[in-house]
Amino acid sequence: MIQAKNLAKRFGNQLVFQNVNFTINDGDFLSLIGPNGSGKTTLVKIIMGLEKKSGGELLVDYKQVIGYVPQFRNIDIDYPLNIEQFVRLNLKFTLSRKKRRQDNELIKTILEKTGLSKLKDRPLGLASGGEKQKAYLAQALLNEPKVLILDESTASLDVEVKMQLMDLVKELNEKENLTVIFITHDYDLTKKYTHRALFFKDQTLKEVDVSDVSEDMFDMGG
Amino acid sequence: MFAYEFMREAFIASTFIAITAGLVGVFVVSRNMSFLSHTLSEIGFAGASFGILIGISPLAGMILFTLISSIAVGSLSTESSRREASISAISSLFIGLGILFLSLSSESSSYATNILFGSIVGISSKEVNQLMILALFVIFVFIIFYKPLSFDSFDHIGARAAGLKTRLLSIAFLVTLALSVSIGAQIVGSLLVFVLLTLPGATAKYLVHSVPKLIMVSVGLSLAGVWLGLYLAFVTNWPVTFFISAFEVIAYFLGLSYKNWKLNH
Image (cartoon, rainbow over all chains, first blue to last red):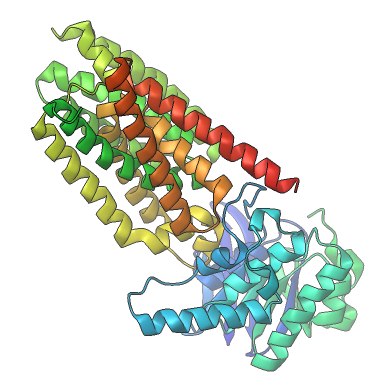
């Protein structure tokens, strides 16, 4: 469970948000929406402990591992690692043979789960947008997180690939009770997949019913 | 060839230099720090000249200057465009300082040539021992930090998201880079040490697709370059640096052509 009470964030004198209150329960699939620059990524960075809050309270059970799939990554055509080796970057160093065997099993399971088993030897730099996103997701899943944060992971993908990726996340949410926080500008995906929606407006965060989510809430202007 | 002691010393020193440079080079390339490694070698030149001027060894002067500046550059700015501009400003200053220190010291100009362009005859057995210890230290640091450093170098954003202490890793890496520049400059010279620190690593990424294999290929190319360079320099009496850079550049373009060929087939 993640709970915020009167959470606030400032960068210097500039207020990003204040009076933010919410409770995220285990197994929730929620979208975090709002214009660009409204504080969505800043909020998830605070949840992950990568950014400091400026005020209020935030209760996060850090025994729950949080997996984060970031918005941008510098993977060009010459990026050398193949998909499996990219996913493996998130493994801890071990000299134990037993642990290494377990790690190999885990990699195999996660590649299967994300539909990457047959593509594991493909250089990531040559993979399609959807395959890259699946590899990022697989890497984040390696720590067996209880909470998964997707930061605009479906942006720049075509509709069919978006749906495939979201179906996969939905399956993990339903079968493994994985909590999913989905930062998005996509109206259709919000409606189709998420159960709750948190909406940034006027420097604060409001919960809205998914059925009340409207397209103007995704105004990119911000 | 091995009947000459200076050649034996040069081979031992070069072997350690090549292993260190090949290993560090994989991470220089993946962290986009080729330009920084070039600048560090120019800073190393100023350090070596400073060492001569105040009467300490050129190697000690180099280590002093490269260590201080690598840590300074590392904490200077995380924005790459700003970092590039800062690095080129620093680079020009240090080349000027190197020339100033040399002109203030009483050493002859051939000494400067050795620092800048490298030499196979200038290595004493005491210096070989120093190089070996430094090289082993660099390798040791890499073994300790191998996993997190690989994560941070090949996926900086993912490593930050996973909560790794990337700033600390960056400083640890810059320290090993500074040491590698100082070690490598002893044979190939400070102007061309970046050849060994960038090209084998860059070539490797066109050929193989995992971190251990990248390291193996990079170290292999680096070793092949210095061994072949030393042999040809001995036979022809031409500068060793020429052969090493020629070999690494040819290997790089062959690697690039191979990658392009593979993309089209």
